[in-house]
Amino acid sequence: MGASDFNDEGIIEKLFSRDESAVSEIKTMYGRLINSVAYGILRSREDAEECENEVYMRAWSGIPPARPNSLSAYLCKIARSAALDRYRRDHAAKRGEVLPIEELENCIRSDSSAEDRHSERELTSLLNRFLKAQDYNTRVIFLRRFWFSDSISEIAKRLHVSESMVKSRISRTLKKLREYLAAEGY
Image 1 (cartoon, rainbow, N blue to C red):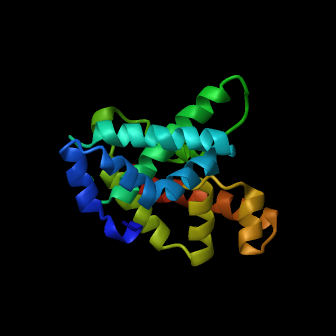
Image 2 (image 1 turned 120 degrees about the vertical axis):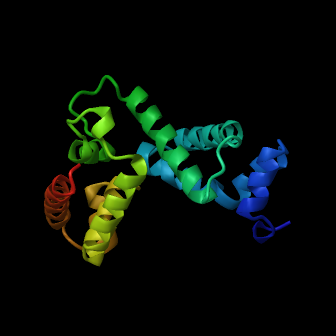
Image 3 (image 1 turned 30 degrees about the vertical axis):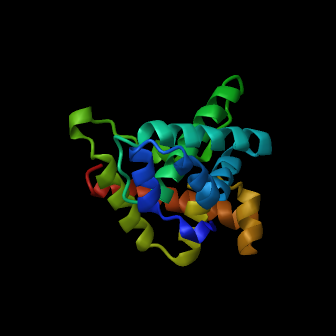
């Protein structure tokens, strides 16, 4: 069976029926993607492989009850979470080191009570609308930095621009995002 013989719905159904072949199908279809997300945060092949295995275990135990609309998005979210957990655990002693996601969290934290905060879905919608209003390079820089955790130098190389341009664009974009979220009541 090739990767094209597998599909998300079929894999999810196998997970619901506790068919262990679903895990190998996930690995075949999404293993490289999962590993890439983890590696982008951890910068270690060995750690990324361990996170990849963690994703398979979390998917096995999370489906059911979860029934994701997009299996790839669900797996990437687990991969990011597992990699961030590992990164924070491994780097807890290093002070002053800020992970890109923590930089973004500073932008979107709410000072209001839990009852007043937007749901995760509403925040996702706000972020999507904000990014759609940005030019292509700004979106690429934002996603490479805050989703894939690329370094400033990696982004600059990818886009064939200077590191100072990337830093400046990130700074301006985060400022705009803070203003946008404040205007939206977040």
